[in-house]
Figure 1: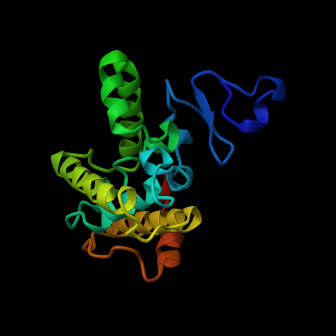
Figure 2: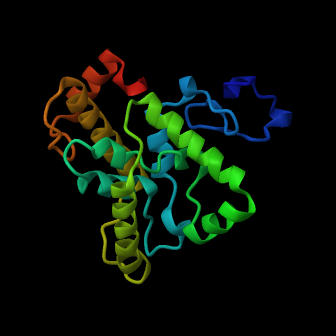
Figure 3: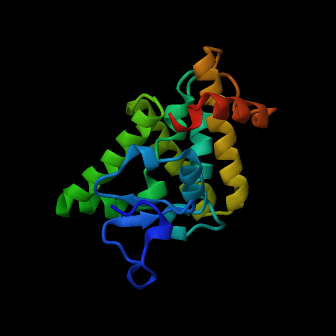
Length: 206
C-alpha cells in the first residue's frame, strides 16, 4: 500500500479512493490508517476548506467554524467541539442538502465519513460528539447564514491564521486535559509552550 507521495508514480497520480495530504501522506479513505493521521494535516485541510461550498461573502473556513465551536463549548468538552468536523480535512465539506440526499442514495459514503471521524476521535482520545455538539453546530449554521451568506457581518480569517488558531486551541486543550487542569482557556496566551510540551509528551499524535 502506498503511504507517501514519494512512492507515487507521476504517471499514475490518481489513486482511487485515496488522497494526498499537505505533509505528503497518502490516506486511504476507504480504509484509514490511524497512524497516518496527524493534527497538522487536519488543521491544514480544515483551514483551506471553505464552508457553504465557497459561496460566502468572504472565505470562511471549516477551521474557523470549528474554533467558534470550541470557544462556545462547555468547560471540559472543548476538544470534542473543536474536532467535530475533523473528517472534512480528508473528505471535504459537503453541503448539508447534498449530504442529506447522499444518506439515502449512497449511505456507504456517509458511513465512511463517520468511520474517519471515529478514527480521529479515538486517536486523540476524545469523546465522540453528542447531541450537544449537534445542537451547537446547527446554531452556528444559522448564525453563518445570517452573517456570512446573507450579509458580510463577520471577521473572516485567512487560511494560515485559521490553521494557527485551530492548532493553538488543540494544543492548549490537550495540555489541560492531560494535566488535569481546568479547561477554561479559549486559545493559549503562550501556545508555543503548550505545543512544545504536547510534542514532548507525544500528545499531538495520540
